Amino acid sequence: QLSELKKLNSIAQSHGGKCLSNTYLGSETKLRWECSKGHIWETIPYLIKNGSWCPTCREGKLSIEQMKEIAIEKGGKCLSDSYINNTSSLIWECSKA
Image 1: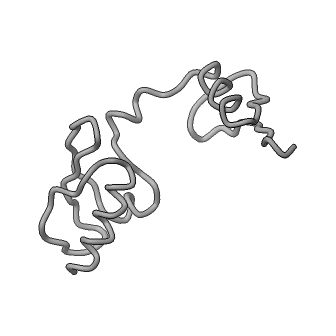
Image 2: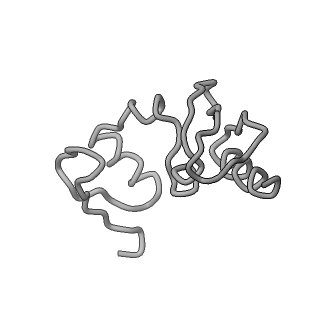
C-alpha cells in the first residue's frame, strides 16, 4: 500500500501536484489530490493512473487556434478546422511529416 501511494505521488508530481491522502485502500477508493494551481478534489487512483488530472483545470479547454499554435511551437501542424469536444478526433501532422 505504501509503494502504491509512492507511485501515485510520482504521477501527481509529474503534473506538478500531489496526493494529499495518507492511506491507500485500493484503486476504487477515492483519494484527495492537489494540482499545481492549488485546486483540491477527490477521485479514484484508477483514473489518475489512466491520465485523468485536475477537473477544474480541465474545464479551461483550449480553442482550435491555441491548439494550432501549440502544434507550430512543437514543429508540427493541427490540420483540423474545428474542435468539438475531448471525444472527437483532431488531425495532426508531426514535424517529421
